[in-house]
Image (cartoon, rainbow, N blue to C red; front, side, top):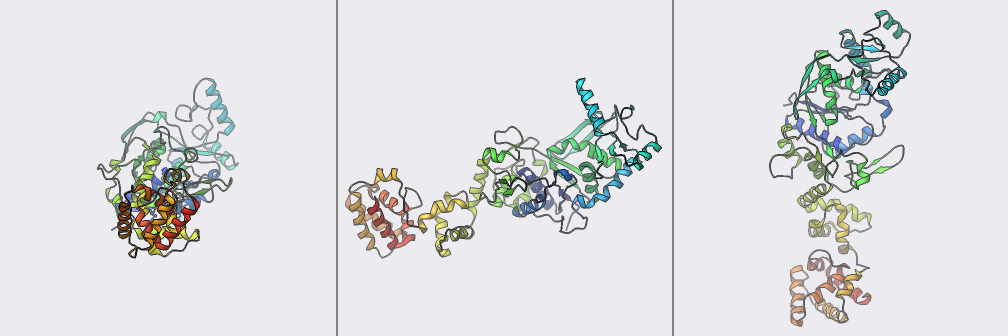
Length: 506
Ligand code: GLU
């Protein structure tokens, strides 16, 4: 049965979703699913100056790839819709007006020039200008707290630009609760009177966010630490409206690999790892940023890694399926301090998932890569190759590098190792070996190994004298899985052909 846990992921579509944003979405998802609740996507696009057209689709595609779909959102179960704030804009003014009527907010007519001059004046005296209790009613600022009702009405009628500001109460200690950080105390005198409604007729983030969380019956607000400074205002807004406040949880920052400073959108390019789930093309500049998906990460490995950036289960277990994460996730185990992002650990997760995946699953991912290279081999053969190489791979994209010799005759040989291992007598030894191989009927890995090793023993020479040149002949380098597995896979004719090629070339 659905519970009344309702959480939302509320990104602003200003560009691609950074992994910090994906983690916020993930924790919301895990929390919702754990409590049989609802996970909502709300697009907070009231700031038209920062709007990027392809960003919303990017966000939806990223959640899809991560397999953390929303239950309600744009175009899906729209019972509390619309879920794009730009489509709800008519709604917010009325709420701002209610706050003006009840004395919790006021009109402010100060022009940007006037505010600038206040700011500069303060700076000149080494002070910071804050629009709040200490100056809002002193007469230098132009607002409805000091102007007469008629004056205010006349200005509005005359089309003067105004904003609506929140009237923060004076001399009060707010006691706020955060599910992760515990009790937080804030002196209201340190807060400024934030704008709730802008002169362009749009609500600010604060107003729209609170109104929507209330109307959408959000029970828990789980969001990044950067929103913690907004908590006092948000909590006061609930009081002002007389609404029950949701519970709040502010997630720790994701830090750069060096452990200092927030991991930023630009770090990916600078430090050489993706910071976005999917590749992203900037609409204006055409610049392309790397994505985890395109870099070859498995979505489940990526999600597992992200879950651990700020949370841990309190046990040694690190590998969790999404279902296990849902079961185990607990806000109480989310840490207060920043979580260091580690590109190496991220690769480690991918490698662990690689080993866990079935050969069949990996074969299905490898086949299209082979097709693209113009190689058509039946899937049983590819499946066997996959079984032999997967333990050395971190990414599917490594498969070709690790296995090309199963599909193609090598044309180049590793010169350094040829020099070391291909001696003057090697050619005739290899010719003898060809005859031995031609006589083998049972070409299984075990039998070829037995016959060839017996032949080497009979000649009373070191194994390396044959095995290294043989590997160079078949693979082109001293790498790859068990040599007799390769021999058995490529078959007698191809084995003989490769040894002959090597004799000719080396
Ligand atoms: N629109 C805000 C953002 O971009 C949402 C913050 C919140 O969750 O309240 O992150």
